[in-house]
Image (cartoon, rainbow, N blue to C red; front, side, top):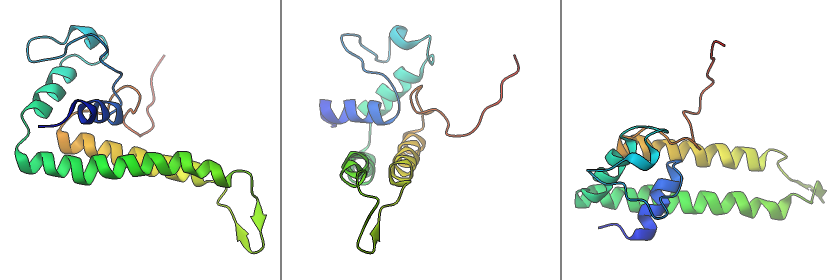
Length: 131
């Protein structure tokens, strides 16, 4: 069974806001119904009912990688002050590239779980709306 921290990390990486003192379970999804009706129930249900092999994949493939990728983004701050040193040059797009890779893995995790990416992650594509 996933720990509370792992559950919070899955929700966060999936792009959903924190739960705080609300409960999203099989009988309630009222707190975030205005964002994405039923998604919290589905996410909660799937995470609470993972088969052991699915939990293994979620933890070892996705959560472990996502923690490292997220750390790599913030770690890139160490290179932001250097344009070049001897023959070394920093990648001006390092943070953007790392963020894109991180978000790609977040979307992959959502696909593995079988839920749509949350409001803070989105679909990753370009959308056009008619006014």
